Image (cartoon, rainbow, N blue to C red; front, top):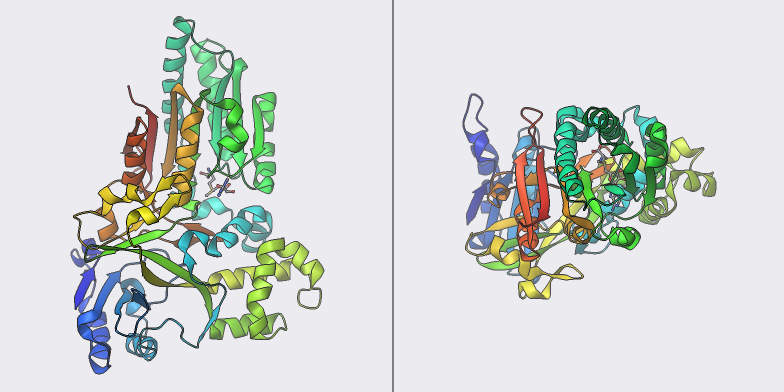
Amino acid sequence: MLVEIRPVARLRGKTPLDVSTPLTTVLEVLRDGTVDLSRVRVVCDWIQYKENFRDVVDVRQIGPGTPDQELEVAIDLRRAAAADLADLTRRLMAHNGSPEAPDRIWLEQWLPGSQGCIWLFNRLYWQALHLWERATGRGYESALPGGASDARNEAAIRELISDLFRIWDDLSDRRALPDELYVVELGVGNGNQAKAWLDEFVVMDREHGRDYYRRLHYLMCDYSPHVLDIARKTVAEHGDHVSSLVLDATTPTTVLGFLRYKVFLVYVSNVYDNLPCDEVVSIGGEAFAVETRAFLPASAAATIAASCSIETPALPALIHKLLQIGPELLAEAMPTQFADADAAVTFWRDCWQSLRRAERFVPMRGLDSYQITPGLSGEMLRPLLDARGDLRINVNNGAVASFVDTLPLLHPYGRLVCHDLFITDVEQCRTGFRGPGKYDGSVVNWVNGPLLAHIGSRKGIDVRYAPFAHRKGTSIVTMTAQVRD
Ligand SMILES: C[S@@+](CC[C@H](N)C(=O)[O-])C[C@H]1O[C@@H](n2cnc3c(N)ncnc32)[C@H](O)[C@@H]1O
């Protein structure tokens, strides 16, 4: 039996984590059962997200689903002390590890993580942000690391703009600076960072004296028309210098193709960690795809169903209806169930809060049989997985797609700058939980920096990571990607 303890940093210090009690409890339950102990892995995480998609204990099938298959038992050490671990483990093991346990109301079939319905919830959150924020009385930024977007940090903005000015001055001196100076932001949220950037630009341009502001076009892009509406109001005083475009950040060239090789700065903050993500696990030298299946615990499902006067079996269809049409239309369409839009928002929030994902590990039969994006083979994962022993990594399919499809937009001296939760060394997957977690109504996954760097290097792009320099103690890392010199 293999036991893996990931949050090693918590094993030392003033209040070291108690691993032995939860481990002993789980091991005793396993010992008393009938499962072949030589085929069990026990994995201990510390899930830092108070709201997440996991139970305190989860059991996952590894392999093809035969009776003698291996199992992974996953424990969240953060919540273990407060839970009846023995009872939870016993109940899961009563089904011999099969996640088809009867106390779950399934919302979908088994799917790669990036295709699961948590992403429909995520999208709905941004489409109907005002309704969610009205219900919680809290803006989305308060859930971000540090409680505000680092993209608003003045020193960080000044550094970015002075870099741009340096490049523009140089091109201008060589008469190679185009008339139109394009800056693109993907995933703009409330527009506060666009405003901070533009305001600072005006001040610095005045000091600099080259009248770049007159030539500046700032394109705010987001897949949520509602978010863009808010952002447009935030930057209203910058008038014609700003345009807003509805687009999916995973395919920017579909809308921005006309800017090929013309953009000097593509600016992305706290978006890559919010894009659909598969996971891959390597166990004993074999690669497995992590398939996931969303469910509600039966007790929570019964409470939610009763709150809107439906039978529990009808709940999955109602949730999918909500995800399709949103809370306002749902309330209009089903006045017996929902008195008004606020009641439908309560339903939405309750479902989100109870939402869980079961996992199983399915053999991949070769990395090349897997596509990270339609144009990128799973072979790109090989350098990250080979010769590293057992490892679980995020593939961040949405972030990879966005990254790859942004590169063609860059001017030869242009840059892609992202502030986000990047891991910069694959080993960080071994020592910490990298998602998914829940931020209010949205999903967060750490971004696989080495994977983007590897893909970038294959395309002649230099990808660098530096800790976000302008706020102490933050986990945010800045990625800068540009054409190799
Ligand atoms: C966490 S917010 C970050 C907002 C802002 N950049 C900041 O740092 O505060 C994520 C933003 O990305 C947008 N977004 C998420 N997925 C997207 C996608 N696939 N395409 C375009 N925008 C997306 C959301 O609508 C939201 O505005």
